Image 1 (cartoon, rainbow, N blue to C red):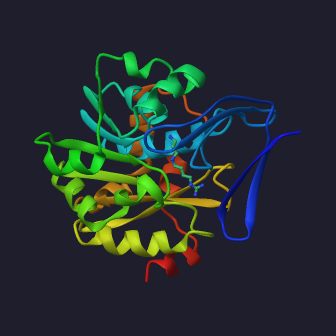
Image 2 (image 1 turned 120 degrees about the vertical axis):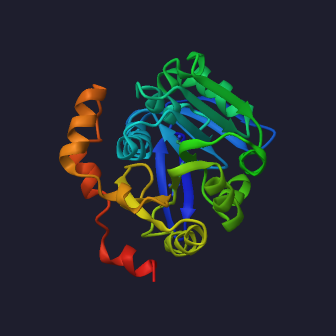
Length: 281
Ligand code: AG3
C-alpha cells in the first residue's frame, strides 16, 4: 500500500493511505501532487506539505473568510493572495456585498490543476464575473497596485520556499497600504504547537504597520497539531469585538450555509490559549 508522508514538523509525521495518485509533477514553482485517499477524499500537497483536502477544507476556508467579512459587514472589494485552489474565493463570493474579488496567485498550475482535479473546492468561483484572477507574485502586486481593499486574505503556504516572502514586515506594510481605512488583513499563520516562532514573528512584524493586531484560531484536522493561528491586522480595534447579536444578524441576512463558522464561534475564536498568548510576548 502506498502512503504519503508529511514531515513538516520535527520528529513527527502525518501519513495518508493513497488510493490513487491523480497528478504529480514539478510546476515552475513547486512540487505538486494530488491524490485520492480513503479518509480525507482528495488531497493536494505542495513541496510535500498538505495544503487542502476535500474532507476538511471548509474549516479553514470558512474561518479565513467569514470572520473578516462578517466583522466588516459591508466589504465590497476583497483581495486574496495565494489560495490557488479557489476555496477562499468560493467563500468570499458567497457574500452578496462583495462586488470584486481579486485573486493574486503565483503558480498558474495550482489553479488549473485544482479546477481539474478538485472542482468542488472552487465550485465555479473562477467563472464568476466578480472574480479577477491575476497570475503574479503577491509581494510585487501589493507593492505596486493602486487598488484599495476592504479585506485582504493571505492564503499562503508555510514560511519555507515560495511562501516565505509573505511573512515579512515589508509585505505586511504593503498590505496595510492596500487597505481602505479600517480594512482588515487576515493571514495563515501555522500551527503554534509546532510553529510557535510564526506567532512571535508575525505578531512583531504586523505590529509595525497595524495599530491592532493579533490572532484567532481554527482547528483543521489535516494541519496537525491542534489550533491553527490566523493572523489579524487592522487599525479598527473594534473589529475584533463586534457584538454577537450584530454578527448573528449579518450572518442571517447573508443567508450563507456553513459547516464550521457560526457567529458565536467567530467571537470565541479570538480567545487564545495561554501558550499562544505567551508566544506573543
Ligand atoms: N494554505 C495553508 C497551508 C498550511 C499548512 N501548514 C501547516 N500544516 N502547518 C492552504 C491552502 C488552502 N487553500
